[in-house]
Image (cartoon, rainbow, N blue to C red; front, side, top):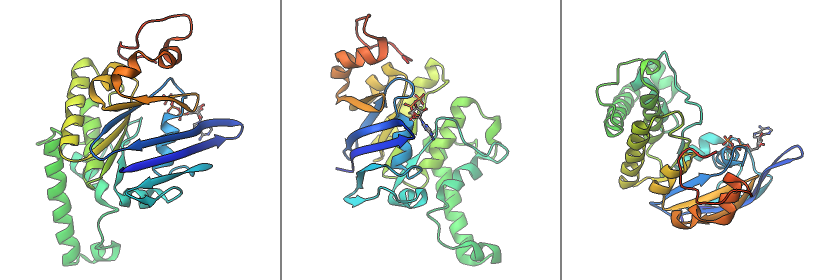
Length: 262
Ligand SMILES: Nc1ncnc2c1ncn2[C@@H]1O[C@H](COP(=O)(O)OP(=O)(O)OP(=O)(O)O)[C@@H](O)[C@H]1O
């Protein structure tokens, strides 16, 4: 098991945002995390990446307990993420935005780079080369010198993913990668996530677009009011009564098969 989260709980005052949730992810899987607004999905990611400390529970990544470590330590373990709201340096180039993703990996050090030492220059060149290679894999070859803020929404998301990938993570966490995208961009993002997995990176994604996750994921976990109500293959998820209830409400029936359900 690549990742094992057991009994994760997080409270904000009187609100239990994540309530005793467990999730296991195997190497090479694409796992979806879905659920209505406020279900606790982003909080769950924030616990996994060290932004919040869980009130209870353990997180084991590659056999090592990592709960409570600081975010940069968790990144060093090989867990990278993107955010629900795109976080790019919009006045910087695409290339520089991607290079930022390598900072916790480089070790020539601040003083070396200030003094212009050769080790720092070599490292800088390696980081640039690797960033260009990753930009090519996410479909942004030739965009490296444009300002990130001038790119289309879909391409800005690709830059974010490139920034996460440049550190060669073992696990990539994507928080609503298709938010605000049209159907064509959603398809392109789906293809990109598949290619990322093919290159050996395990993926967990939060999504509201149910048809997209059903088509993409090996397994889907559904959160509702902080509780995991089911965790299974997509075919089971779309016809599961608790999922239908969480998404559509008690009165209506039918399958959860349409896109962008909230
Ligand atoms: N820092 C915080 N302080 C207080 N409450 C919080 C905090 N972060 C999240 N919450 C609350 O925890 C609950 C879960 O929020 P979270 O953002 O994890 O849900 P979500 O499933 O990601 O929702 P969405 O799909 O709308 O992004 C919500 O009720 C939210 O208001």
